[in-house]
Length: 261
Ligand code: SF4
Image 1 (spheres, rainbow, N blue to C red):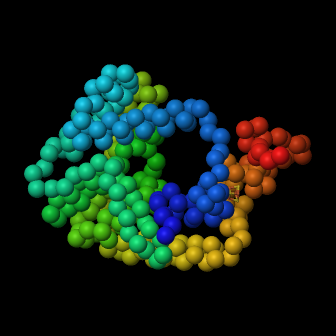
Image 2: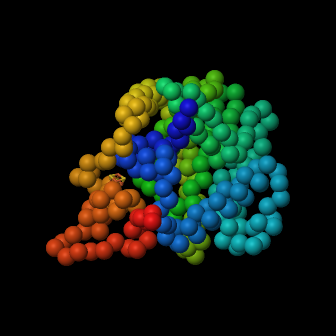
Image 3: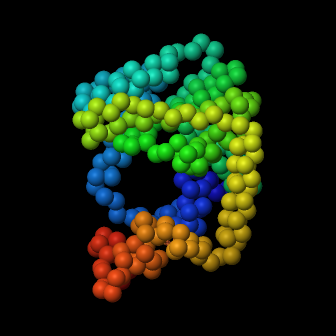
């Protein structure tokens, strides 16, 4: 059974062809070194938070990176309740949940899950400089899928679960002393039903598309997604990304697809 994570659902909804290139054919795209460095730092932050939660020493990791140490300390100061041990609950970092759904395996990995007899709190660490708007975050598949899966795989009702994003500034913003901030989403039975209906629609569509043995469809260029897509050259949508105002504008060399000889 194909696994569907929030990343798969997001790309499927934006553009089925992009889902195909990324997850079915595993095409890699060149990444800006600055983005790679932010990803590395984010991975380190997650590693420290997980090791800390497991009771493993983190001093060696922190002493090599003052920004990382400041970020972890800032989070511990901003959310002390989150790190206070609870006697009768369940708590786990990098907690994985799966659910068989309409021929697929829905999958989520929570950065931290804290559960009590009548409550469940999903926590996600984001090493973004600028948190997105709350309404945008509420629409993200990560928020919707994570809450849906917790209700479907536990004894909890929608009203008993929440999802909290904690935003921790990466080193660039650390100089500006940005304190960690958070956004919490409650959940309702109506949202749960809407998410289920959307999951049904998306998985039905994917099953129908995969049965045709042709390339998955491209998004309508008028929606504007091609302008930010790293597959614009491969898709021959490069004028959407790079512009063609009369003169020929060549894409960056790293964006030109390799031709096998
Ligand atoms: S360039 Fe446009 S059509 Fe092609 S994969 Fe990207 S978003 Fe989809």
